[in-house]
Amino acid sequence: MNWEIVIGLETHAQLSTQSKMFSGASTAFGAAPNTQASAVDIALPGVLPVANKDAVERAIRFGLAVGGENAINRRSVFARKNYFYPDLPKGYQISQYELPIVKGGEIRILTKSGEKAVRLTRAHLEEDAGKSLHEAFRDSSGIDLNRAGVPLLEIVSEPDMRSAEEAVAYAKTLHSLVRWIGICDGNMQEGSFRCDANVSVRRPGGPLGTRAEIKNLNSFRFLEHAIEFEAKRQIDILDDGGKIVQETRLYDADRDETRAMRTKEEAHDYRYFPDPDLSPLEVSEKWMGEIKAKLPELPEAKRKRYQIEYALSLYDASLLTDTREKAEYFELVCRSLEGPAPKTVANWITGELSALLNDRGIDFSQLLISGKAFAKLLDRIKDGTISANVAKEILHGMANGEGDADAIIAKRGLKQISDAGAIEKIVDQVIAANPKQVEDYRAGKEKAFNSLVGQVMKATQGKANPAQVNEILKRKLAG
Ligand code: ADP
Ligand code: MG
Image (cartoon, rainbow, N blue to C red; front, side, top):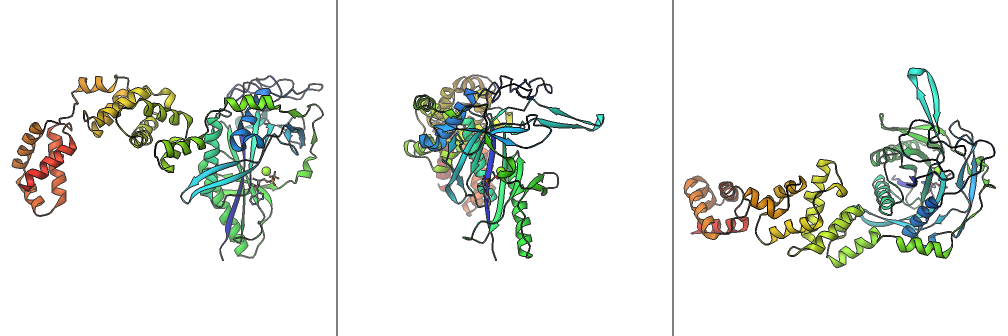
Protein backbone atom coordinates (compact mmCIF):
# COMPACT_ATOMS: atom_id res chain seq x y z
CA MET A 1 0.00 0.00 0.00
CA ASN A 2 1.18 3.50 -0.56
CA TRP A 3 2.04 6.17 1.96
CA GLU A 4 1.81 9.93 1.81
CA ILE A 5 4.62 12.01 3.34
CA VAL A 6 3.58 15.00 5.48
CA ILE A 7 6.03 17.75 6.40
CA GLY A 8 5.82 20.92 8.48
CA LEU A 9 8.84 23.17 8.93
CA GLU A 10 9.94 25.36 11.80
CA THR A 11 12.55 27.84 10.60
CA HIS A 12 14.80 30.02 12.72
CA ALA A 13 15.82 33.19 10.94
CA GLN A 14 18.33 35.35 12.78
CA LEU A 15 17.17 38.95 12.55
CA SER A 16 19.97 41.14 11.22
CA THR A 17 19.98 43.75 13.99
CA GLN A 18 23.11 45.41 15.36
CA SER A 19 22.33 44.47 18.95
CA LYS A 20 20.64 41.59 20.72
CA MET A 21 16.96 40.93 21.38
CA PHE A 22 17.01 42.15 24.98
CA SER A 23 20.45 43.72 25.53
CA GLY A 24 22.76 46.20 23.83
CA ALA A 25 25.51 43.62 23.13
CA SER A 26 26.71 43.25 19.55
CA THR A 27 25.46 40.42 17.34
CA ALA A 28 28.47 40.45 14.96
CA PHE A 29 29.53 36.94 13.94
CA GLY A 30 32.94 35.47 14.72
CA ALA A 31 34.06 37.46 17.80
CA ALA A 32 36.24 35.80 20.45
CA PRO A 33 34.13 33.72 22.88
CA ASN A 34 32.16 35.67 25.48
CA THR A 35 33.35 39.10 24.34
CA GLN A 36 29.80 39.92 23.24
CA ALA A 37 27.92 38.72 26.30
CA SER A 38 26.51 41.48 28.50
CA ALA A 39 25.22 41.23 32.05
CA VAL A 40 21.74 40.54 30.63
CA ASP A 41 23.01 37.78 28.34
CA ILE A 42 24.84 35.97 31.12
CA ALA A 43 21.85 36.46 33.44
CA LEU A 44 23.42 38.29 36.35
CA PRO A 45 20.90 38.83 39.17
CA GLY A 46 18.86 42.00 39.00
CA VAL A 47 19.26 42.75 35.31
CA LEU A 48 16.22 43.55 33.19
CA PRO A 49 15.61 42.83 29.50
CA VAL A 50 14.56 45.61 27.10
CA ALA A 51 12.98 44.56 23.79
CA ASN A 52 14.88 45.61 20.68
CA LYS A 53 12.64 47.82 18.54
CA ASP A 54 14.56 46.99 15.35
CA ALA A 55 13.95 43.27 15.86
CA VAL A 56 10.25 43.88 16.43
CA GLU A 57 10.09 46.00 13.29
CA ARG A 58 11.68 43.19 11.28
CA ALA A 59 9.14 40.70 12.58
CA ILE A 60 6.34 43.07 11.55
CA ARG A 61 7.88 43.45 8.11
CA PHE A 62 7.81 39.68 7.75
CA GLY A 63 4.17 39.44 8.85
CA LEU A 64 3.13 42.14 6.40
CA ALA A 65 4.99 40.36 3.60
CA VAL A 66 3.34 36.97 4.15
CA GLY A 67 -0.15 38.00 5.20
CA GLY A 68 -0.69 41.75 5.22
CA GLU A 69 -2.07 43.64 8.22
CA ASN A 70 -4.28 40.71 9.24
CA ALA A 71 -1.17 38.72 10.04
CA ILE A 72 0.01 41.16 12.71
CA ASN A 73 -1.15 40.71 16.29
CA ARG A 74 -1.54 44.25 17.62
CA ARG A 75 -0.72 42.88 21.04
CA SER A 76 1.70 40.01 21.64
CA VAL A 77 3.31 38.64 24.77
CA PHE A 78 6.80 37.44 25.68
CA ALA A 79 6.83 34.20 27.63
CA ARG A 80 9.43 32.21 29.50
CA LYS A 81 10.17 28.74 28.19
CA ASN A 82 11.81 26.93 31.10
CA TYR A 83 14.42 24.26 30.66
CA PHE A 84 17.90 23.50 31.91
CA TYR A 85 20.92 23.44 29.66
CA PRO A 86 24.48 24.70 30.23
CA ASP A 87 24.24 27.18 27.35
CA LEU A 88 21.13 28.82 28.86
CA PRO A 89 22.28 30.72 31.96
CA LYS A 90 18.86 32.14 32.88
CA GLY A 91 17.30 28.69 33.02
CA TYR A 92 14.67 29.87 30.56
CA GLN A 93 14.50 31.20 27.02
CA ILE A 94 12.42 34.29 26.34
CA SER A 95 10.06 33.42 23.50
CA GLN A 96 6.45 34.05 22.56
CA TYR A 97 3.86 31.39 23.18
CA GLU A 98 0.14 32.00 23.29
CA LEU A 99 0.29 35.37 21.57
CA PRO A 100 2.98 35.53 18.86
CA ILE A 101 3.59 38.72 16.90
CA VAL A 102 2.67 37.12 13.55
CA LYS A 103 -0.22 34.74 12.89
CA GLY A 104 -1.22 33.11 9.60
CA GLY A 105 -0.11 34.16 6.13
CA GLU A 106 1.30 31.95 3.41
CA ILE A 107 4.32 31.24 1.23
CA ARG A 108 3.69 30.40 -2.43
CA ILE A 109 6.07 27.80 -3.82
CA LEU A 110 6.79 26.58 -7.32
CA THR A 111 7.73 22.93 -8.00
CA LYS A 112 7.71 20.67 -11.04
CA SER A 113 4.02 19.99 -10.38
CA GLY A 114 3.13 23.70 -10.34
CA GLU A 115 2.33 26.46 -7.87
CA LYS A 116 1.16 25.80 -4.35
CA ALA A 117 0.45 27.82 -1.20
CA VAL A 118 1.97 26.63 2.07
CA ARG A 119 0.08 28.11 5.03
CA LEU A 120 1.97 29.60 7.94
CA THR A 121 0.78 28.93 11.45
CA ARG A 122 2.68 31.73 13.15
CA ALA A 123 6.00 33.51 13.52
CA HIS A 124 7.28 34.56 16.91
CA LEU A 125 10.20 36.48 18.35
CA GLU A 126 12.68 34.76 20.62
CA GLU A 127 16.27 34.81 21.74
CA ASP A 128 18.96 32.33 20.77
CA ALA A 129 20.89 30.29 23.36
CA GLY A 130 24.68 30.12 23.75
CA LYS A 131 26.94 27.45 22.36
CA SER A 132 28.85 24.64 24.05
CA LEU A 133 32.34 24.12 22.68
CA HIS A 134 34.07 20.80 23.17
CA GLU A 135 37.82 21.07 22.81
CA ALA A 136 39.31 17.60 22.69
CA PHE A 137 42.90 18.86 22.68
CA ARG A 138 42.34 20.55 26.05
CA ASP A 139 40.19 17.74 27.29
CA SER A 140 37.58 20.29 28.32
CA SER A 141 34.32 21.92 27.34
CA GLY A 142 33.53 25.60 27.40
CA ILE A 143 30.55 27.81 26.79
CA ASP A 144 30.42 30.75 24.44
CA LEU A 145 27.56 33.10 25.25
CA ASN A 146 28.04 35.43 22.27
CA ARG A 147 24.98 33.91 20.63
CA ALA A 148 22.91 34.07 23.81
CA GLY A 149 20.20 36.67 23.28
CA VAL A 150 20.64 37.02 19.52
CA PRO A 151 17.19 37.82 18.04
CA LEU A 152 15.43 35.06 16.13
CA LEU A 153 12.17 34.89 14.26
CA GLU A 154 10.80 31.36 14.43
CA ILE A 155 8.53 30.79 11.44
CA VAL A 156 6.18 27.81 11.75
CA SER A 157 4.42 26.30 8.76
CA GLU A 158 1.31 24.15 8.70
CA PRO A 159 1.94 20.49 7.78
CA ASP A 160 1.18 21.33 4.14
CA MET A 161 4.17 19.86 2.31
CA ARG A 162 4.00 16.43 0.73
CA SER A 163 7.55 15.73 -0.47
CA ALA A 164 11.16 16.64 0.20
CA GLU A 165 11.04 18.62 -3.05
CA GLU A 166 8.18 20.78 -1.74
CA ALA A 167 9.91 21.28 1.60
CA VAL A 168 13.08 22.45 -0.15
CA ALA A 169 11.09 24.76 -2.43
CA TYR A 170 9.39 26.23 0.65
CA ALA A 171 12.69 26.71 2.50
CA LYS A 172 14.30 28.34 -0.54
CA THR A 173 11.36 30.67 -1.10
CA LEU A 174 11.36 31.67 2.56
CA HIS A 175 15.13 32.15 2.50
CA SER A 176 14.83 34.40 -0.52
CA LEU A 177 11.98 36.37 1.07
CA VAL A 178 13.74 37.16 4.38
CA ARG A 179 16.72 38.50 2.46
CA TRP A 180 14.46 40.37 0.05
CA ILE A 181 12.80 42.31 2.87
CA GLY A 182 16.14 42.80 4.61
CA ILE A 183 15.36 41.11 7.91
CA CYS A 184 17.95 38.29 7.84
CA ASP A 185 21.26 37.86 6.00
CA GLY A 186 20.39 34.23 5.21
CA ASN A 187 23.92 33.00 5.89
CA MET A 188 23.36 29.30 6.46
CA GLN A 189 26.98 28.41 7.27
CA GLU A 190 26.91 30.90 10.13
CA GLY A 191 23.58 29.54 11.32
CA SER A 192 21.52 32.62 10.45
CA PHE A 193 18.88 30.45 8.76
CA ARG A 194 18.16 26.91 9.92
CA CYS A 195 15.22 24.54 9.71
CA ASP A 196 13.66 21.85 11.87
CA ALA A 197 11.72 19.38 9.76
CA ASN A 198 8.66 17.63 11.20
CA VAL A 199 8.06 14.48 9.19
CA SER A 200 5.29 11.89 9.34
CA VAL A 201 3.63 9.50 6.92
CA ARG A 202 -0.01 8.50 6.54
CA ARG A 203 -2.47 6.77 4.27
CA PRO A 204 -3.49 9.32 1.62
CA GLY A 205 -6.41 11.32 2.98
CA GLY A 206 -6.23 9.62 6.39
CA PRO A 207 -5.49 11.22 9.77
CA LEU A 208 -2.01 12.63 10.41
CA GLY A 209 0.59 10.13 11.52
CA THR A 210 2.99 10.45 14.45
CA ARG A 211 5.86 12.77 13.58
CA ALA A 212 9.54 12.92 14.22
CA GLU A 213 11.24 16.31 14.38
CA ILE A 214 14.68 16.57 12.80
CA LYS A 215 16.61 19.44 14.33
CA ASN A 216 18.89 22.13 12.94
CA LEU A 217 19.21 21.47 9.23
CA ASN A 218 21.43 24.23 7.90
CA SER A 219 21.60 23.43 4.19
CA PHE A 220 18.94 22.72 1.57
CA ARG A 221 20.69 19.49 0.64
CA PHE A 222 20.68 18.25 4.25
CA LEU A 223 17.01 19.17 4.50
CA GLU A 224 16.21 17.14 1.40
CA HIS A 225 18.27 14.11 2.42
CA ALA A 226 17.07 14.12 6.02
CA ILE A 227 13.41 14.13 4.95
CA GLU A 228 13.96 11.39 2.38
CA PHE A 229 15.80 9.20 4.85
CA GLU A 230 13.29 9.83 7.63
CA ALA A 231 10.20 9.14 5.49
CA LYS A 232 11.69 5.87 4.30
CA ARG A 233 12.61 4.87 7.85
CA GLN A 234 9.04 5.44 9.03
CA ILE A 235 7.51 3.64 6.06
CA ASP A 236 9.75 0.62 6.66
CA ILE A 237 8.70 0.49 10.33
CA LEU A 238 4.99 0.78 9.49
CA ASP A 239 5.21 -1.77 6.69
CA ASP A 240 6.73 -4.18 9.21
CA GLY A 241 3.75 -3.64 11.52
CA GLY A 242 5.67 -1.36 13.90
CA LYS A 243 4.80 2.00 15.45
CA ILE A 244 6.42 5.42 15.14
CA VAL A 245 7.56 7.06 18.36
CA GLN A 246 7.21 10.83 18.59
CA GLU A 247 10.76 12.03 19.09
CA THR A 248 13.44 14.55 18.26
CA ARG A 249 16.08 13.29 15.84
CA LEU A 250 19.42 14.48 14.54
CA TYR A 251 20.58 14.31 10.95
CA ASP A 252 24.10 12.96 10.53
CA ALA A 253 25.37 14.30 7.21
CA ASP A 254 28.41 12.02 7.12
CA ARG A 255 26.29 8.90 7.31
CA ASP A 256 23.26 10.43 5.59
CA GLU A 257 20.85 9.16 8.25
CA THR A 258 18.74 10.45 11.14
CA ARG A 259 19.25 9.26 14.71
CA ALA A 260 17.12 9.52 17.84
CA MET A 261 18.20 12.38 20.13
CA ARG A 262 15.50 12.49 22.80
CA THR A 263 11.82 11.78 23.16
CA LYS A 264 9.82 14.83 22.31
CA GLU A 265 8.92 17.27 25.07
CA GLU A 266 5.35 18.46 25.31
CA ALA A 267 4.57 22.14 25.73
CA HIS A 268 3.59 21.58 29.38
CA ASP A 269 7.11 20.32 30.11
CA TYR A 270 8.34 23.86 29.55
CA ARG A 271 6.06 25.52 32.09
CA TYR A 272 5.47 28.50 29.82
CA PHE A 273 4.27 31.68 31.51
CA PRO A 274 4.25 35.39 30.55
CA ASP A 275 7.56 37.08 31.33
CA PRO A 276 6.87 39.53 34.17
CA ASP A 277 9.96 41.58 33.21
CA LEU A 278 8.58 42.52 29.79
CA SER A 279 5.35 44.34 29.11
CA PRO A 280 3.17 43.10 26.24
CA LEU A 281 4.25 44.26 22.82
CA GLU A 282 1.84 46.81 21.37
CA VAL A 283 1.89 47.57 17.66
CA SER A 284 0.13 50.83 16.84
CA GLU A 285 -1.66 51.32 13.52
CA LYS A 286 0.60 54.28 12.86
CA TRP A 287 3.81 52.31 13.33
CA MET A 288 2.52 49.44 11.23
CA GLY A 289 1.53 51.88 8.50
CA GLU A 290 5.02 53.37 8.46
CA ILE A 291 6.63 49.93 8.20
CA LYS A 292 4.23 48.93 5.44
CA ALA A 293 5.02 52.08 3.45
CA LYS A 294 8.72 51.21 3.48
CA LEU A 295 8.27 47.62 2.21
CA PRO A 296 9.76 47.03 -1.26
CA GLU A 297 7.67 45.46 -4.02
CA LEU A 298 7.55 41.79 -3.00
CA PRO A 299 8.77 38.86 -5.11
CA GLU A 300 5.30 37.55 -5.73
CA ALA A 301 4.02 40.91 -6.94
CA LYS A 302 7.02 41.19 -9.23
CA ARG A 303 6.45 37.68 -10.61
CA LYS A 304 2.86 38.59 -11.47
CA ARG A 305 3.88 41.91 -12.99
CA TYR A 306 6.66 40.36 -15.11
CA GLN A 307 4.21 37.87 -16.60
CA ILE A 308 1.87 40.69 -17.63
CA GLU A 309 4.17 43.63 -18.32
CA TYR A 310 7.03 41.70 -19.96
CA ALA A 311 5.08 38.65 -21.23
CA LEU A 312 7.42 36.26 -19.39
CA SER A 313 6.54 32.74 -18.28
CA LEU A 314 6.02 32.05 -14.57
CA TYR A 315 9.24 30.04 -14.70
CA ASP A 316 11.33 32.92 -16.09
CA ALA A 317 9.67 35.36 -13.69
CA SER A 318 10.56 33.08 -10.78
CA LEU A 319 14.19 32.76 -11.82
CA LEU A 320 14.50 36.53 -12.09
CA THR A 321 12.93 37.16 -8.69
CA ASP A 322 15.20 34.74 -6.95
CA THR A 323 16.97 37.72 -5.36
CA ARG A 324 15.98 41.35 -5.22
CA GLU A 325 19.29 42.43 -6.77
CA LYS A 326 18.72 40.22 -9.80
CA ALA A 327 15.14 41.45 -10.26
CA GLU A 328 16.16 45.08 -9.94
CA TYR A 329 19.00 44.58 -12.41
CA PHE A 330 16.59 43.02 -14.89
CA GLU A 331 14.26 46.00 -14.63
CA LEU A 332 17.12 48.43 -14.98
CA VAL A 333 18.30 46.73 -18.19
CA CYS A 334 14.76 46.66 -19.61
CA ARG A 335 14.37 50.39 -18.94
CA SER A 336 17.59 51.21 -20.84
CA LEU A 337 16.89 48.97 -23.82
CA GLU A 338 16.34 50.13 -27.37
CA GLY A 339 15.91 46.98 -29.43
CA PRO A 340 15.52 43.53 -27.89
CA ALA A 341 12.54 42.04 -26.08
CA PRO A 342 12.45 41.51 -22.30
CA LYS A 343 12.51 37.76 -22.92
CA THR A 344 15.98 38.15 -24.46
CA VAL A 345 17.11 40.11 -21.40
CA ALA A 346 15.68 37.42 -19.12
CA ASN A 347 17.56 34.69 -21.03
CA TRP A 348 20.83 36.58 -20.80
CA ILE A 349 20.49 37.38 -17.11
CA THR A 350 19.39 33.91 -16.01
CA GLY A 351 21.85 32.26 -18.42
CA GLU A 352 25.19 33.79 -19.36
CA LEU A 353 25.29 36.51 -16.69
CA SER A 354 24.30 34.22 -13.81
CA ALA A 355 26.95 31.72 -14.92
CA LEU A 356 29.54 34.49 -15.01
CA LEU A 357 28.64 35.66 -11.48
CA ASN A 358 28.73 32.08 -10.28
CA ASP A 359 32.13 31.39 -11.83
CA ARG A 360 33.59 34.50 -10.27
CA GLY A 361 31.84 33.98 -6.94
CA ILE A 362 30.40 37.50 -6.93
CA ASP A 363 26.92 38.97 -6.75
CA PHE A 364 25.19 41.81 -8.55
CA SER A 365 26.52 44.43 -6.12
CA GLN A 366 30.07 43.52 -7.19
CA LEU A 367 29.33 43.38 -10.91
CA LEU A 368 31.21 46.04 -12.88
CA ILE A 369 28.58 46.15 -15.63
CA SER A 370 25.86 48.76 -15.14
CA GLY A 371 22.34 47.97 -16.27
CA LYS A 372 22.72 50.59 -18.97
CA ALA A 373 25.95 49.06 -20.28
CA PHE A 374 24.38 45.60 -20.33
CA ALA A 375 21.40 46.95 -22.30
CA LYS A 376 23.78 48.46 -24.83
CA LEU A 377 25.50 45.12 -25.36
CA LEU A 378 22.15 43.48 -26.11
CA ASP A 379 21.25 46.36 -28.42
CA ARG A 380 24.40 45.63 -30.42
CA ILE A 381 23.22 42.06 -31.05
CA LYS A 382 19.81 43.29 -32.07
CA ASP A 383 21.13 45.90 -34.51
CA GLY A 384 23.44 43.31 -36.09
CA THR A 385 26.78 44.81 -35.00
CA ILE A 386 27.79 41.58 -33.27
CA SER A 387 26.57 38.00 -33.04
CA ALA A 388 25.30 36.48 -29.79
CA ASN A 389 28.45 34.39 -29.54
CA VAL A 390 30.73 37.37 -29.81
CA ALA A 391 28.55 39.16 -27.25
CA LYS A 392 29.42 36.48 -24.70
CA GLU A 393 33.10 37.21 -25.19
CA ILE A 394 32.45 40.95 -24.83
CA LEU A 395 30.43 40.34 -21.67
CA HIS A 396 33.47 38.80 -20.00
CA GLY A 397 35.60 41.73 -21.13
CA MET A 398 33.08 44.15 -19.64
CA ALA A 399 33.11 42.23 -16.36
CA ASN A 400 36.90 42.61 -16.32
CA GLY A 401 36.50 46.36 -16.53
CA GLU A 402 37.72 46.70 -20.13
CA GLY A 403 35.07 49.30 -20.98
CA ASP A 404 31.67 49.24 -22.61
CA ALA A 405 30.51 47.08 -25.51
CA ASP A 406 31.36 49.60 -28.23
CA ALA A 407 34.86 50.16 -26.86
CA ILE A 408 35.60 46.43 -26.77
CA ILE A 409 34.13 45.87 -30.25
CA ALA A 410 36.39 48.60 -31.64
CA LYS A 411 39.48 47.58 -29.69
CA ARG A 412 39.27 43.90 -30.59
CA GLY A 413 37.86 44.36 -34.10
CA LEU A 414 34.78 42.30 -33.37
CA LYS A 415 32.32 44.05 -35.61
CA GLN A 416 30.12 41.54 -37.38
CA ILE A 417 30.54 41.16 -41.14
CA SER A 418 27.13 41.81 -42.66
CA ASP A 419 28.40 42.80 -46.09
CA ALA A 420 26.79 40.20 -48.37
CA GLY A 421 29.51 40.56 -51.00
CA ALA A 422 32.29 39.87 -48.50
CA ILE A 423 30.47 36.86 -47.07
CA GLU A 424 29.76 35.48 -50.56
CA LYS A 425 33.44 35.59 -51.38
CA ILE A 426 34.32 33.52 -48.34
CA VAL A 427 31.44 31.11 -48.97
CA ASP A 428 32.76 30.55 -52.51
CA GLN A 429 36.22 29.79 -51.16
CA VAL A 430 34.85 27.34 -48.58
CA ILE A 431 32.72 25.56 -51.19
CA ALA A 432 35.69 25.26 -53.55
CA ALA A 433 37.94 23.90 -50.83
CA ASN A 434 35.46 21.28 -49.54
CA PRO A 435 34.10 19.23 -52.44
CA LYS A 436 33.46 16.22 -50.20
CA GLN A 437 31.18 18.10 -47.77
CA VAL A 438 29.37 19.74 -50.66
CA GLU A 439 28.69 16.35 -52.18
CA ASP A 440 27.53 14.94 -48.82
CA TYR A 441 25.17 17.87 -48.36
CA ARG A 442 23.68 17.38 -51.79
CA ALA A 443 23.25 13.70 -50.94
CA GLY A 444 21.06 14.82 -48.02
CA LYS A 445 23.46 14.89 -45.06
CA GLU A 446 22.45 17.87 -42.86
CA LYS A 447 25.61 17.57 -40.79
CA ALA A 448 27.74 18.48 -43.79
CA PHE A 449 25.93 21.83 -43.94
CA ASN A 450 26.80 22.67 -40.34
CA SER A 451 30.41 21.83 -41.01
CA LEU A 452 30.46 24.25 -43.96
CA VAL A 453 28.87 26.99 -41.82
CA GLY A 454 31.54 26.31 -39.21
CA GLN A 455 34.30 26.79 -41.79
CA VAL A 456 32.88 30.12 -42.92
CA MET A 457 32.64 31.30 -39.31
CA LYS A 458 36.20 30.16 -38.68
CA ALA A 459 37.48 31.98 -41.73
CA THR A 460 35.90 35.18 -40.38
CA GLN A 461 36.97 34.64 -36.76
CA GLY A 462 33.33 34.23 -35.83
CA LYS A 463 32.42 37.65 -37.13
CA ALA A 464 30.20 36.75 -40.10
CA ASN A 465 26.50 37.34 -39.52
CA PRO A 466 25.28 33.75 -38.93
CA ALA A 467 21.84 34.29 -40.46
CA GLN A 468 23.40 35.66 -43.64
CA VAL A 469 25.95 32.87 -43.82
CA ASN A 470 23.16 30.31 -43.64
CA GLU A 471 21.13 31.98 -46.30
CA ILE A 472 23.99 32.56 -48.75
CA LEU A 473 25.42 29.08 -48.28
CA LYS A 474 22.01 27.47 -48.88
CA ARG A 475 21.50 29.51 -52.01
CA LYS A 476 24.94 28.71 -53.44
CA LEU A 477 24.67 25.01 -52.67
CA ALA A 478 21.25 24.82 -54.31
CA GLY A 479 22.51 26.57 -57.42
P1 ADP B 1 6.15 21.81 18.57
O1 ADP B 1 6.19 23.28 18.78
O2 ADP B 1 6.03 21.03 19.80
O3 ADP B 1 7.27 21.30 17.74
P2 ADP B 1 3.74 22.16 16.92
O4 ADP B 1 2.42 21.49 17.09
O5 ADP B 1 3.78 23.62 17.12
O6 ADP B 1 4.79 21.42 17.80
O7 ADP B 1 4.19 21.82 15.43
C1 ADP B 1 5.42 22.13 14.97
C2 ADP B 1 5.51 21.79 13.50
O8 ADP B 1 5.19 20.44 13.25
C3 ADP B 1 4.62 22.61 12.60
O9 ADP B 1 5.40 23.03 11.51
C4 ADP B 1 3.56 21.63 12.17
O10 ADP B 1 3.11 21.93 10.85
C5 ADP B 1 4.30 20.34 12.16
N1 ADP B 1 3.47 19.16 12.38
C6 ADP B 1 2.52 18.97 13.33
N2 ADP B 1 2.00 17.75 13.22
C7 ADP B 1 2.62 17.11 12.20
C8 ADP B 1 2.53 15.81 11.60
N3 ADP B 1 1.69 14.89 12.06
N4 ADP B 1 3.35 15.55 10.55
C9 ADP B 1 4.20 16.44 10.10
N5 ADP B 1 4.33 17.67 10.62
C10 ADP B 1 3.56 18.02 11.65
MG1 MG C 1 9.18 22.16 17.34
